[in-house]
Length: 371
Image 1 (cartoon, rainbow, N blue to C red):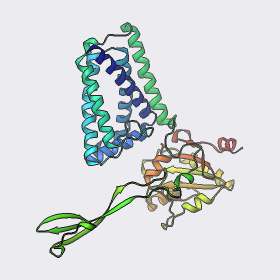
Image 2 (image 1 turned 30 degrees about the vertical axis):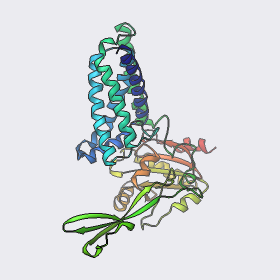
Image 3 (image 1 turned 90 degrees about the horizontal axis):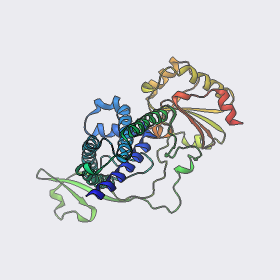
Image 4 (image 1 turned 90 degrees about the vertical axis):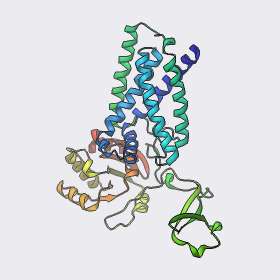
């Protein structure tokens, strides 16, 4: 039992530190995943606290992992870990059964896990943490309590600093398809000969108050006795999906402008404001000046939002912007830059640089990049 406990604490400690660091690298992205769970369990009142909850979870995972490796506060740590892993095992188990959340966000966008894989990972972790819980008496401190407390305090301060830095100034490591250096257009293309979705038609009928689903080749002989309700397509084998498959830009009249956007081979500046009513305020003057300088240089400026046109027009007019907003779904906007607002510089369709709301660039800064 002694060696089993020691192996378990090392494995769990390392895994929690890695998991916490990856999520802390993109706390805003992790908060989006929490909001999905809040919606499923009808706890949307927690939405305003999603970011702070995500930060707390990230910091706890890192500090708890360090405490495990140091071998201190074992009973308290074991209890907290046990309660946490039971909660997440139930959560991922629910996702594995219902498929309502396709990725738990355990390792952010660095490693995508299926609901079943996430559940099995938590089951293994639960088993390891149970070993730790039972064998806490076998875990001894690596160093004196003073040195251990200093190390734990340093890990706490570093994890807080790292979490706050990535929140204010974008992830240190970008795992998303819109990262610097990527060609957006190329990532929307489907290679010739790539496998396509295999779809099966299902017919829904009703008879004697009961609902039945039949495949096309399994319709009953007495079909006339059934009332047709609906037909649906079920994907039985997933085909190739390009990394970027939802990049669609529309104007005020719902005309798609994506091709026009891609055809422009020059420098382009994107202002991304996922939701205007949730955009960080106090930056309007900087945005106005930047857009005027950029447009004045003869280059394309694209302002993208998922807010409705009436709201975006009123917003632009109230701040005397010299541009109009275009529409895009909020999912790709959230992936493009983890900030609201955020600014992206592209050369053709290649991402050159990204800035968060806390570092809106000046015209002089961008000019240096253009040179």
